[in-house]
Image 1 (spheres, one colour):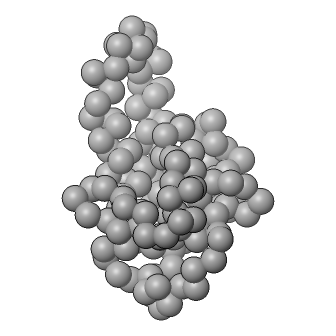
Image 2 (cartoon, rainbow, N blue to C red):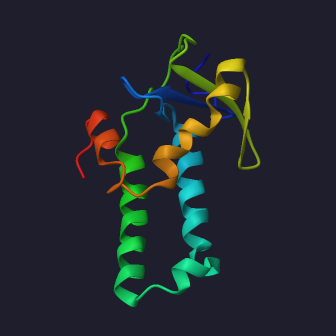
Length: 133
């Protein structure tokens, strides 16, 4: 699989975990777009609307930190990537990921651990990626 293919999102397993992180530019773009979309939908969330101003500010700060952390991930810029059980591959089209193999279908939801939770909650996963919070 060619890492620089802009239509293919590649995710790699975090060492000794069942969670995956973006491994090429397309996967990073997907993660950033997803987090940005989540930020834009915060005001629609009833639980968020009930929070105090400082709590809302803290959540927004965590989401913005998350965007910065995705930009800090060292990615495979180009070249061939061997597809193993530690790699998931997706067709990326119109903001959607479509699994391209069985492993990607089975583990699909495991990419959302980094995207959906705040860096504070996932501190140990970010540290495994050698990214300091």
